[in-house]
Length: 466
Image (cartoon, rainbow, N blue to C red; front, side, top):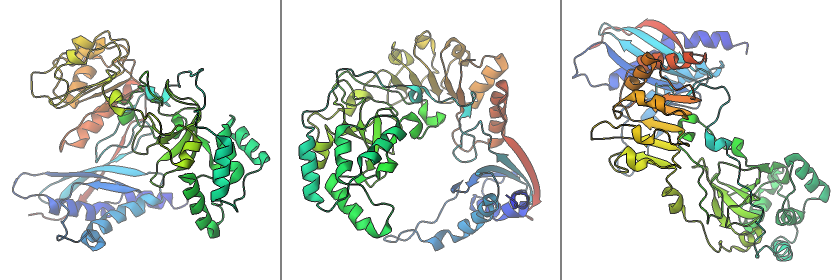
């Protein structure tokens, strides 16, 4: 922390940014003939977003580090300065005169604003600590659920001991300690598995043994001390994407379409970043203790892998896998655009929770057909698609609203921003100037007294430009 003032000075030194600005300027076409020129982007510790036309390697050759050396060296000057601060990333916009005089605008992150794409801000969190509705959803009770007929403790243990004759299992005390840490009892099959073997991940000399255990079980098994409850808080959550998700569990589903559950116990992974869990809160057609897969590419739902842990170890697929098409056909989430639903009226349904209006080639749309729907909580609308943005004030249950800048301007000027909102977003498409978008976002944040995006302006001179 002692280096932070020096690092902040580097961040606020125009020279730190000069190589990035020159790189962006050199990449811009010169046939437009208009000045000033605007360039923008975002640079963070974990990566960066710059609008560059990067060179394509010759056919048959992958991109090499040398191909992007100039870009990497320019960006690293900024990233190295960020490393000594509490700032994770910075968006920037530069207005460059033909003389080289430059005004560089830095947008410091606000704790009330999610990271955006490129220089534009992400979702605005208007209620501190709030999360989208799917992250608040608890599992439906399943009082009649029972273990699958294939769950066989004796067969499971015998199979594992045959495959792992020298394995050392967990003690009853260790299993009891894990149950106390998690706050729930482990299902019998999972306890039987750990009584046979535990994974020696803490011993680097025994990684080969861990691989043999994984082969025997059917997944990369976690150490007993690494078991965790895959509840909603354990799954990545951002308002910008999470608000457009919905929990859908068809009446014949084996797995509830939740973000997470207090009855999902994660015990391993498939080697590709997806978690395996035993499910103690199954869907209407599921079994207690079934094995499910939580994909790292999805925010909600899980895939049924096996009706029981015994089936997983023996390599037997589920008797009746879930059909994902049923969820896609649900009226809970509706998309109106030129390739999906053709009107807002077609999307109107008492179960509708999420309405997304995308690219639209017809006349602007009225929201009248969805006024009064009891569960509508999210509206996203591509700029220019709404006939009357003030109709939004009739949607009294919205918790998330994403609109274009002009639509937000209408609501702000009329004092009609819905008071029910927990989060919001300014929808930006194309190469729009980030500065008015940031100013608009700060107006929305100010309505709720939320921390604004702080802008800093640095003056500099890049010298005469052609």
